Image 1 (cartoon, helix red, strand yellow):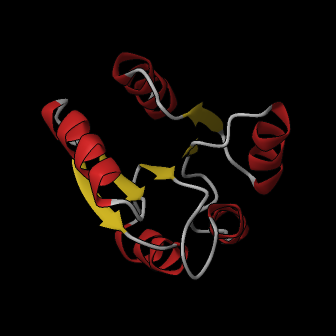
Image 2 (cartoon, rainbow, N blue to C red):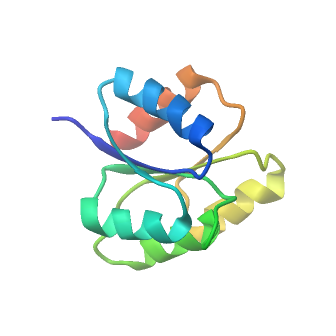
Length: 121
């Protein structure tokens, strides 16, 4: 079974990096470019995991995470916040919003894949 991952990221370069990394690892990808679209895509596609940026237009990643986790049909989906915010309080804020994991940019592709696989098992 191929796992579907929703990537919510507004920067094309970052989406391309994640697309190349995850598709080469055998994952099926769905992409969103802002927080509102991310929430809609989560409802529509029911991914197995979500990679969520924080700095997003229309609705930031914290609020998008809160909305997804507030939905009874979606709350089981693991969310990894992937962000350039790298202070300890940023991780605490992401977890308070409902994130299951936190990865700071720039990230190690190997470590990100390991975290994705860990949360999908």
